[in-house]
Image (cartoon, rainbow over all chains, first blue to last red; front, side, top):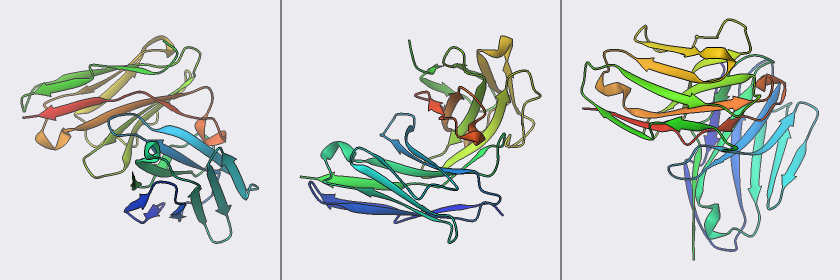
Length: 112
Length: 116
């Protein structure tokens, strides 16, 4: 069964600290993996998209890694800001033309 | 506007009533998706439109749910005989090409449906 599991479920960190969110998937065949940020009451916004051949991709203070062999991805947030408080969702696509498979997300709270 | 828009933003209805949710994708985007997000749950795929191809309806939870996309642009998600478990945020997304090939999905703000 195609699944995407994220951990931790929630996380609280102090402003300025770094954090890493994890995503494990069992989707096969694999096409690409995306990380989205979803602010409360808003639709998700794409942060990164990685294909099978990509190991890392950055978007400002966000850096995503992908290990297609172990089927794991991580999202690292550097020097967190209060505005980083949101839900971060890992999404995997099995192959072209199919629906995306979403994880349940990690809720990040950044406090001052 | 430049983004995906959805209406209404909020909808409260009585159990057993029908509701229609509307999505206006970004102009020129060929792919359109509907998702449902229940409280504390991840996004659940409902239906996918790609150009003039037959839609992928594999995610629709029951035959009370249906969707149309007219003229390759605006889409309407209809829920008939609503039930309380239908209460959720319904999100629409569009993509300039087939999303599985790496195309970014752009999400609308969602419609918050509450069935009393």
